[in-house]
Length: 235
Image (cartoon, rainbow, N blue to C red; front, side, top):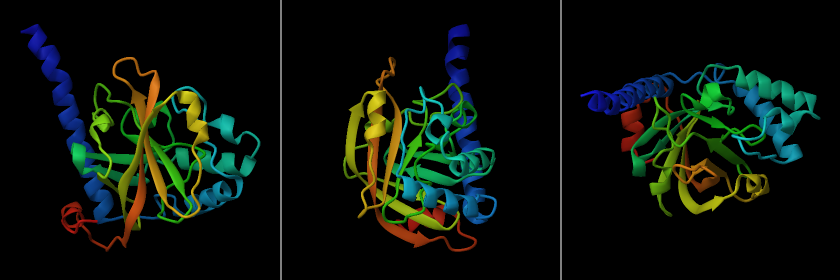
């Protein structure tokens, strides 16, 4: 009996957390507030990243401030965005039935409850030339997060919904790399790219699984949208 309880408890907690995430995403979609999502700070932050180039790092082994210690303006924006409790976006991956909130940053406080935009990379807005990294654990005690990301295949699609747009991506590259190779990720000036990153393989987690999508559709987010309507529209 104790074994059954110990097995069922994490499943119940994950289901409860997924329902809480879904409610948060539904509320975000129905009443997006660009100001609360840090729209002005994001615009300035992305401008600085565009000027300096993205500076990727492994979220699990390198401190975020190591990227920005020489740029006080960028560091101030990183701290401002990291302090926000509001969603930056919602990430939907139909192939693995995942709906997960996206915050800014990769602190343990963020990754313990969802996914986060890796500091030093663009906050995704759909603009050409952006390359954003979104990181999440390969599952936690309370959240499924990117546990099933390894099941995503080439050609699958995922969706990012921010405070203004619904952005649809097609997976064009899947690879596994050592953590130190994350700093080799580059901008493509002709594309908008998002790379989802998590630890791999289970259970050693010594490498990083990277799933990269290119933007194939961008639509404005109508006021009063529902998540169901957006999904039915097909992105």
